[in-house]
Length: 186
Image (cartoon, rainbow, N blue to C red):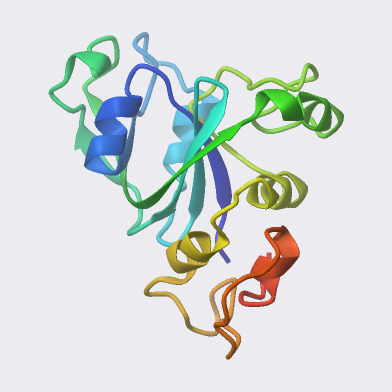
């Protein structure tokens, strides 16, 4: 079964987007564990990641392989972090959805990446609940590219989805339209 995460990206987002990766240190600069970095160590092939930067959902990606150890990229946006880190290679679909208008929903569904104010907790990568995942999916307009991302190279029974036989164009842009093509067993 795939896991669903939200990556809160800031100064490293340009590098990570252009290289289609997630990268975080394994420990804080003073050698301590951090929930967001620890989450990176658990990312597996096929996991789905929602990328947020500047209060917008900017991309959705699928991990193409398990997380692995990697030295920090040679880019100034990573200069404040420890050298040894975790990296995940991603197949990414770019989206642009403002999350500001949805704070009241996130406020009433706090936990994981969202705090009691409906804004993001300060952590790099945190697991989403099923309800949070479904809500974020419902905000994306281009469902066809989302279906292709989630199912690419994985249209096999035994993962967390199964393709149905119909591939007619989507007429309604909501989560139920995705489910007419993809059955989530999440």
